[in-house]
Image (cartoon, rainbow, N blue to C red; front, top):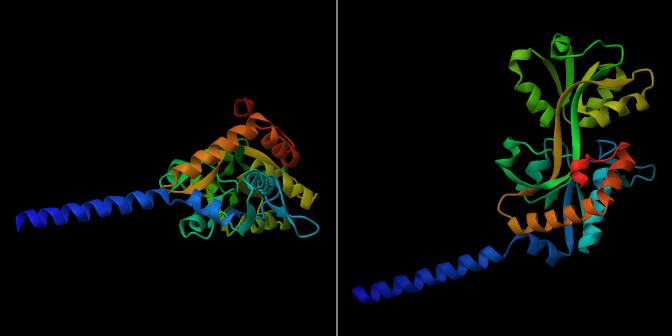
Length: 264
């Protein structure tokens, strides 16, 4: 009786191992290639990284990066509209396969998602009206700083409790920029590129970067536990940094080249 019980247990264990092995091979990269489509979460309201052109078609540096990726992999591309706060939940809930949307690499985010190697860079700053005198953090005390909810700028400034900063949170970059353009905010915390875009929308309210928060690597976000997909994306990024295509896209929309160390 004991031998029969052990034998049955051994068979059950073997079946479990076999099922586990099968499950391990069924991953997101396989699903994407089988579907012949990749769903990419991209914010289309943060020019020049993501926006709509005059014909209401997506454009921008992140948009063209996503389009190049899909083309190189031979896949149909589906954009999943997102905001700064919903980028990570989109892949966690399987609404999107990956994130290409000015997603900077931080230790906090690395706890809940995986990152590829960097494909671009982002200079995170506090920008204010040109007429505002602000050369350091002390000069920002007493000034209201507009920030998009859930972004790295929101997290960074919230954690600077000793600097006594006053923040006004907006749901996305588009509404934050509108606040700056319309005069609701004289300072914003965002990328240097977006700061420079404010004056284009309203020449009477030209903003400029005042205080550097940090320079971040931008990477593709992938849900935890998909090493084959991360490896595939890393190979693609390395190839397109080396051949200059990612630098061309960045320069086209941001007016400057990627850092030399990234391109070499």
